[in-house]
Picture (cartoon, rainbow, N blue to C red):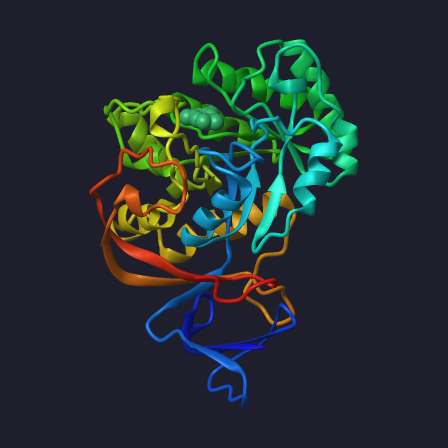
Amino acid sequence: MLLLKNGSVLGFGDNFDILISDGKITKIQRNISFLGCKTFDCRDKIITPGLIDLHTHIRSFKENERETIESGIEAAISGGFTTICIMPNTDPPIDNPKILGKIKEKQSKIQVFPIGAIAKEMGQLRLSDIKGMKDSGIFAISDDGAELEDKSLLKDAMDIASELDLLVILHCEIPSEPKAIEKNISLCLDTKSRLHIAHISTKDGISLVKQAKKESQCITCEATPHHFTLSDVAFNVKPPIRTKEDKEAVIEGLCSGTIDIIVTDHAPHPMAFDKPGISGIEICLSLVLTELVNKGYLSLIDAIGKLAKNPSKIIGLQRETKEGCEAYLTIIDLKNEWVVKKEDFKSKGKNTPFEGWKLKGRPISVITPYFDLLF
Ligand code: DOR
């Protein structure tokens, strides 16, 4: 049993207590007294539904210099996430039920949802065992990390996804983001599948999604902190950092609701590898608070919505701070001012363009049904 005392519970108000027992939220009230139970003082802290990252890369299932599930989970916890969805471009790729079984066997302090690869070995030639992976519990398939170029193979995959009610998460960069988005939207409408566009980053791409959403409720998209904070800087990441106009369009898309969720696209690499990506899961929430909430673009409730409620709807999870719900919670100190130092990252990836940034607002703890007060 755990009692959180005097927190500002998002959606309730200040000075609320939350009682958790058997991994569930059993009471949310002011002044709960419960003798003999572990308590945690949340005065001046915000308690939100546990954050969900729909786009996390880990690298390897064996211990080495690259990010493992274990190190990725520690990084996710330190970033305030209680749920991560792992992209399939791991080594070996997540392209068959057997590897899903191995991931499931790993004990985890947080919720981990693997995403299946569309193509076998993340290649270009054959589809993976999508049906087998669905039977093993995946909710989505993706080509992230190795965009599929063969349109008819992609259509076959989307037909299967539609039949099995799987989400299709697509990286849209070849031959340009708007062209790829246009092609993928038309495939989505043809196959009646659910399309989620990964890390949208261009003004024209966002306009296309805005239009398409008027015709179909089966299209969603995401943006990363680096695409709403940076412009015209050289950092090796895909999609690249774009222009100021694109960055402003991403912010506008988040505010208008065209962009449904914020994801980290946590892509850790050892520095020596010089591969594209940003190790972003530990600073995502602080970038959202500093750059979107504190600057007045998004309310706190809408910002957290993009990191918890909206992704939960896309995955089909319940993620609320409500009596009877599973206890997935994030505790945030909005006043905490800190400076990004990559050497402090729990992640094995120290690749970041945000070194030295001063941020305000930081997760201080997360709770899941399996573990409480994880840091
Ligand atoms: O920058 C990126 N890195 N973009 C991707 O789509 C893949 C990712 C990775 O796996 O490193």
